[in-house]
Image (cartoon, rainbow, N blue to C red; front, top):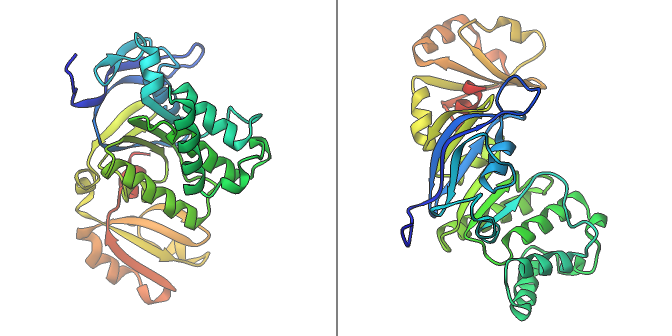
Length: 304
């Protein structure tokens, strides 16, 4: 193994099939994540993200393929994996019976941080995340947003070089969301942490990630930098329209609706069809109508 391997993760031919399920949870997935990279993993519920991550941290053994973390097989070196990766799941918090300060302190201790340093680092993290006043409160008594911040603290304590975060800003208010994104940027750019973001929110992800993998039905269907993936839609224009109930029926077939939420419609149109659109539709009838180039969300939806 090289002293400083270039890749944080090397995933090769990963395959996982659960009994009684016709489709593989993960089918022949291969990709590399460089050290210090901010990587995004996008996919809808059931796409296979959680199964993939559990194999990457050694919690689920694959039926085929390999996972190497900083050059080491994760299943041959479970202690190294546990010490190297800080994993923040989206599901229920495992330390609910502990107080906030106990949960963070014991997590540091499990990562090999000495007692005095663990207390010092814990107090600094609680202050940073605005949890100091909740230090003595039992985790199960916290609100959803407070518990999410505690999960972040538990993940970051001990400064593991690789962070895997599943929807880290869920249940946080807008100001806290901005704070967490800024913190993650600093950890990545200033301190060199490798960060793997698991999400279905392509809009937020696009602001921070360097590369992205898109999972669909257990397979990796796209991999690359956001700009590279968006270039596949460069001949298309994104429309954002506010419509009434009857106005949807007046849109031509070449307007491909991606989402319609309470009259807020997002659609894609080929650039070549724009001249036809202005002739076929009275755009002044819509309270709101904007056009712009395709986003990472459009790429994500195009594979959904």
